[in-house]
Image (cartoon, rainbow, N blue to C red; front, side, top):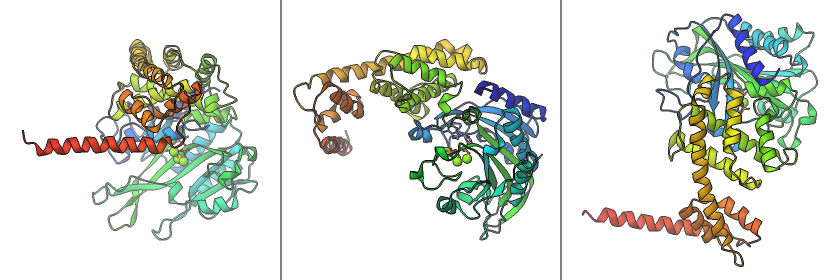
Length: 471
Ligand code: ATP
Ligand code: MG
Ligand code: MG
Ligand code: MG
């Protein structure tokens, strides 16, 4: 099954189980100024998880496009993208742990075809201080579903994540207990003191185990919650079952909810038995195009191709959802994605315009499942091309100026001026100087900082003068 099939099979599977498929939320949350982007399927459903009546009932499902600007520095690794789709299902006071765990396991094994021996799970270890028991209920359900497939799922580390780091995984261990840093969800306290209290509860994450060959020992011992590469988190199920009171105590909720979120790209990668999400059907064609256009080899260095593919895909969805490049808020993030894509392209010698072809390809990959892309297609292309043209002008001007330093040395002050006056990114100044064989002052960063400080002083001085002058 490719990624597209998995998305559709998931929605079919959940509809057969009585869920109503709801419309996805916009990437820009409506009526919620607390965050720039929709970063999970749950976000738009929070009012209903907190008790409001949902017009479509108590079993809901969707595939929610998400954008996590906070993951931008991770992009380039094998598993994080700023934009991704989160498969979601919710029970609003209906089924609970048993049905949820069974259904997700059945989806992964019977529908997607994952090898159940390669799955591992985590549950909440409990908290004595607060009187919350270990989630043996979830663990017992997991043991039962594995046992039904003839797999003895042994309970692994009884301890914390720190124990996991110290001990690693022994053969046959499948169920890991972690503390509240990993396996506890709460709303963050803002409802404390209201009649709702603060809903919270344990969660249970599911990981795909790529085996010890994928373990990078520099991350310590392999266990699901470490980033060693052996395990990849593919889904998370939150069991909202407590209410935290103002005095810090916890009371069981009468309406218990399930919130499930699974990464489509990650499940699709597991289906290919590859730890690289860029190998899936929704990303690999983009990577191949970029590789062809630039001549850069993915095998030699996947990072630049991953960054460009991810950032353009995210920017396309932002454009579909009405965001336009600008200097603030969502528009700023979008501009950053686009400019970073272009800068990264320069770094692999992709210096011709390339948005039109790649953006068109991204639209092709998604427009059957997201008809809003088809109807806005021309406009999306126009928006992105406009930003490409304007940033390329900046870059070209900067590149010409750097060429002017041939025969001399590029100093930190020069690099500052290029960035401050011409908007030319400093990393690119250095790369370009190296490309042209122009020496860069060894301690350029100090010169850069000094020039930056001097400029800040000047502008502070200017505003003091302004303030002192009532006219
Ligand atoms: P990770 O620990 O890998 O950063 P997470 O715990 O932050 O993931 P959740 O908030 O639990 O992720 O989101 C639910 C699911 O969404 C994850 O299990 C994962 O499959 C997927 N997911 C989360 N972040 C990303 C991302 N940046 N790129 C792709 N998929 C993601
Ligand atoms: Mg994360
Ligand atoms: Mg995680
Ligand atoms: Mg998680």
